[in-house]
Length: 410
Ligand code: DOR
Image (cartoon, rainbow, N blue to C red; front, side, top):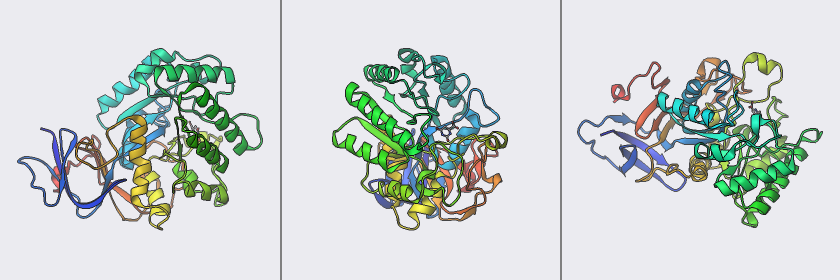
């Protein structure tokens, strides 16, 4: 029997708060309560009063595998995810080769299984090679992917996007657009125009839409209207768009960092607005590519500490609300029985403390440290990550790399 008893934690999820222990058996949360007795031979993880949340689910990350191992690969990405408190990650197709064939998607799934750390959910390309000219073999990809995206670029051709939406609707897969028309000097407007177009295509075709990293008050307004009309649309916002502004310091990322006013609107939308999920858009780059202007932030390891420090600790949102955006809602979007700490849900947890730390270069398990947060003091340090009852990250070590088994710390 695979089992784990997590003792003495403050248990918080989107629906509940209690103090006690969590028993996981065969990967599933089996019991919650005070002073649970460990069944014979079951390892115990002593939480020592730390907080346990449902492990996070990232709907949007770039692990650069295959193709760019100098930036990240599946193993370093999975280690970074575990270090960040994530057990499930949806991977974008802008790799080399692009994930526009079943072979690439199957490679991602097989590699993740071989590493045995986290679950990956591949996203297939909408167009062949992300070139925006010809639809990818969506039927052949559908068994291996949950969504289709040309992330990094918007699909500019309306007819092609209409056909993609119709196909996705027929295949019961999600269209996950990166909304940006090229060539418009007003970047916010270029996002909003494509958001509006894609919402209209969703209305026409009935396809499910999940909008990547929306970043402007106008996009929020459009999604609100679509939700009022009960369109099957969800959207995500990134930790950096919620916590950083270009006035405090610009950093190359797509979409660009918001100004103060836009950031305030995004944060306000976490309180009853149209945002469904927070997704990292983890975008690792080498120092050389970054210096040459590559957009993106290596964000999966600092997502929770950043959100905790800037939004939860000052009381802007509650920990339960944050858990809804990082775990419950992404689980619902992916159709997983995860995201709550309740009997019958998957035994995926993250434990953290209020400990402060500096986000220095040696903090990262990712191969890349491209973040404007280097050198920043943050709190909410992840202490442990548990995937289906197995400890995959504990106190500075990832399973399979300098891993001290949790049995040693009981
Ligand atoms: O900043 C970004 N970087 N935004 C994207 O949409 C793509 C990503 C990347 O792949 O580097």
